[in-house]
Length: 101
Image (tube, helix red, strand yellow):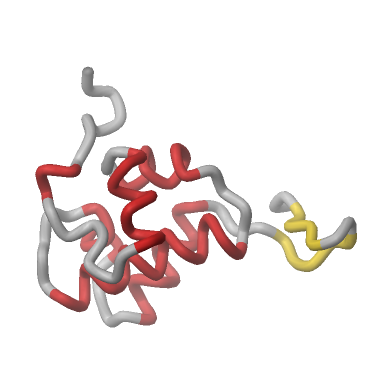
């Protein structure tokens, strides 16, 4: 039972988990799920990560920090991906992975 996404106070659809959303985006781009969190700069991987960020935040209402943590990127890199087509390309924008400090 996922959380409901609300649009103008009416339930639109159940909100998928970030894992499920990432897996679906990866499958749609003919990638493996672990490609979503990889350092790959292949255009297909970059585009899939960007699509995942946009869907998670704009359509399903996830917070940028949640999405950044899921991907292992900094919140700034996730925000950049929302604004610029080349977002999430540079590995130097990666923040610490979950569990790292």
